Each structure stands twice: as C-alpha cells, then as structure tokens.
Length: 283
Length: 283
Image (cartoon, rainbow over all chains, first blue to last red):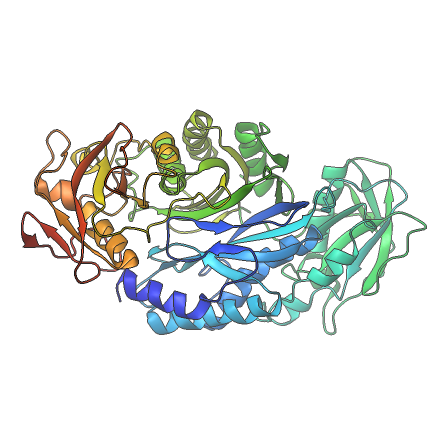
C-alpha cells in the first residue's frame, strides 16, 4: 500500500461531486462555494483507537460512520445543513486497504443519507488508528443556534431517549438530528448536542449562558438504560435545547426542566444539586 | 488537567476575533462569513509524534508552527488568502498544560503573521501526540490555482531554494509562500506546494495534468544541500508552478525546466528519467 493507491481507493469511494463542490479530493485544497445569504459552519472531531473505539467491537464501517456522525451532530446542534467533509486517517500497520475501504463505506453510507460529500483529507502513518473528520455546513446568515442563549424561564428539552449509546455498549451508529436542528431555528434560545452525557453537557450550556438548570427528575430514558446512563452515558448525539415559554416545541422533543437563576452552570435534579458526571477524556 | 481548563488555556491564547468570524472557539461549530465573490478553500493536515516530529528535537512551539504551516502552504499553493484554522490536539500523558500553551504560542505566532485566527478544534487523549490542523481560506471566485493545468511548453518554476528543510534536519520553521501564491493567480497554469520533495511532487503534478516534465539539470539548491536533498528532501514548503511562455514570472521564482509531451507523470532530469524519490509515509 502506498499513498497513491490509498488516494485512488478514497477517490473511488467518495468521488461524486456534491453541491457547491468546485474542486474535491486530490489538490492542495478543496474549493467550495456557499450560496447567497449563507454562512459557514465548521467543526472537527477526532476518533482514536482505544479512546473512542476498539478494534474488537467496531468494524471499519462502524468507525467511519461514527467519525462522520460526530461532526454531523455538531452541525445539527447549530441548526445547520451539513454539506462537505474532510476525512483524515493515520493508519497503523494492521489497517490495510481493506480496512480503509470499509471505513470509507461507513463514511459514505452516512454521508449519502444527508447529502454530505467528502472533498479532502490527509493520510499518514501512526501507531494507533486515528481519524479526524472535519464537517463543513451552512446556515442562513445570522440564524445558527448557539449554546449561549438560554434565558431564565425557558423550558429545557432533549430529543429522543437518553442512554441508548451506553446500553448498546457504544456500538450503535449515531443518528445525527439534522432535520430537528433545522426546525429549531427561530425557536430554540440555545442548542447543543449531547456527546458527553446530559449532566456534563447541560452544565456546559448553563455555564456558557450564565444560568442554572432545574430538572424535574423524570427523563426520557432509553429502554434498559439506568438513570446513571441517561444522565452520564454520553455519545447519544441527541439535541439539548432551551425554548422560551409560549413557543411550540417541534415534535420529537421532551421537556425535562426549566432554566432558572442561580450560580452559572449549576444543575439541579429532582431537588438535588448534581456533580459534574459525564465523559471527560482528561479525567 | 481537565478538558475545561484546557479549553480555557486555548481560548486565552487564541481568543481574538478575526476577520469574518461570527463565532469562534467554544460552541459546537465555528460560524464564519465569506465576502461577496469569494469561494472557500479547505485543507487539513496531521502532525504526529515520531512521524512528523520528535520530542527530542522539536519544542512545543516548533510543533505548533509546523502544524499550522503545512495548511497555510496548501492555501498558498491555491493562490488563496488563509483566514481561519481549527486546531485539534490528541495528547499523551507527558504533554501537560505547559506543552499545550507552548504549542498554541507557535500556532499563534505564525497565525498572527498571516492574519489567521483559530476558531475551533478538538482535544482528547492518545498515546502519541497528534495534531490535526484545518486551514480555511478564500480566493476570488474561479481564480484559485490547481495542479491540473500544466500544458506542454509551459515553463516549470520553483520558489526559493530546495532542500533547506533537509539541511536543517527538518527543524526549521516553514515559511508559507502566501504572498507569492496570490501573485501567481492569473499567471500560473498549475501550482502546488513542495511538501514531499520536488521529484515526487512534480510527478504528481504531471500525472494530474497528463503531461511529462523536462528538468534542465540545474536546481536552486539551498546552501549545503546535496542534489538528493534538493530533489527528494521534502518539507521545503516552496511553491512549484508552471507558467506559459510569454507570461512574466513574479520575482522569487527560478525556472528549472519545461513541460513536455510524453507519458503522464514522467520526470526527466538532465536527460535521465527519474524514479519516484520523495517522502511517502506508506513506504
């Protein structure tokens, strides 16, 4: 396997020209065109062997899906439309061309669902398999959702069920909530995706918004999920948002509490102040 | 060190708002605005411990400079203006907050020179230090330079001197040729940056353009560089371009040969057909 045969395999898998792609894989940069009145959304995420996945439990396609899924979920959280991806791989000796093709099949399967085309990336060597996926999306100028806008009195909502990733042993393929995110534009005062667990992510949103949160104590837990998994399981890639009183929440959301005054970042669950449970790779 | 203290350190280092930055570090995505008539350039590059640098020979600031420099050079090769960067770090235990701050100082020093602001990234754990830097730039619509446009009869040019990175033991700080790249818009028929050595990179340009190259046998070698280093050293981050006869080459370029008919990708040096020397991490 040399770099040229790798790049050929990647081009074969991801060669289709997507919307706004003036130049895709194979040059020094991709050239991309936004529509009038659109602004750019940009996010990047690592997926690393033995940190975010294990060879024994994840196929190459699982890893590809997950690597793209993390970025798509970030664009969903901004209410944006995902459009392009740059997919980089640092490969250990065990990962041959077959693994690489499987990985790009996973990327391609998820990308096709949401109209996202792979337009670039980097390939090199490493000891542990390391993927880094950049997702670029667009949003109508000034309408992207942020995590800083939660106001006292707003309802706190989550999409879907919580803890499903933990119940699956983190082997499920995350389904980014892009459609729901777009429906939240003009409705949600703040929004983010749940990557590290409700407890930690809600704390972050409250810190950024300078508010505190009161959770009623009833959560839409996934079948089989413990309360600990629903609160701290992580990798659910559901949306967490706040919506002002009087604004109708889109379908697919469950109200779990209310934004309140108090120390920025504090989260109360059924009357008890919560610790900062959740996944932090540095602890 | 937890994730929050890391993100605080990064924000402190890279918090300044740059041109077109509607939202920088700290949310799910960065929000960026292009000017009218601009198209987006996007590139991403890994810098990995023991593949692209060694702890013993590179300071944290060296690694930061190099990680950003690779992407800036890609934007230079397209004739673009670099504007934003997303900087991701996967950190082993040995790299504490002091190393991270040093790294971002290196990123910041180079970024400031070229008006590039850090608007996002990712931080996580790994066994070997791994940086991935995305550079986003802009170019006037339709004017970006590509590596596919070399035509028979065009002159072949390189900027600066060749082999200087190899002479320095790959410890020098690369100087991306952004100003020169912009001057090549409307003049060069093809352009790319020299990251893996003239022999390999010229072969790539010729393959992409469907032409062959004739080098006269005299190269602007860096002081102390052997011919092997000038041809195959890599990491010089000079520009390689082709310019049609009759078009005046900008200052800073040396003509080294001519594009000719022949098997796509073949490179002749002083009458001898060259092998594919150069740096390929997969060989």
